[in-house]
Length: 67
Image (tube, rainbow, N blue to C red; front, side):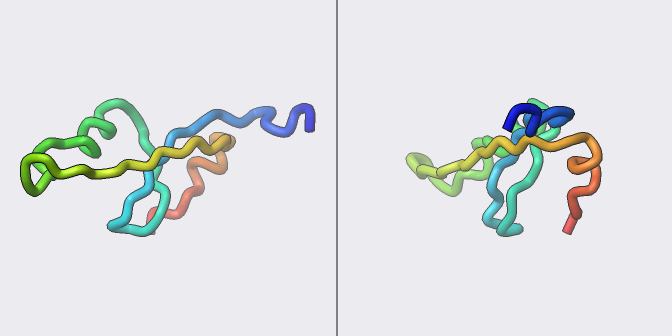
């Protein structure tokens, strides 16, 4: 297993129910749009967010399908 993740970078994704898929997060600006108070429908609503780390090379990350 030594070297298994060689050349791979940790990437952060969140699960989007709207597209039923893991969506990459490119930076802090995108996180602020995921956690936007205007998206909550009423005071006191609880929304769960799922984040997951994927170790991927730059080529793998670049070739993620967009649809």
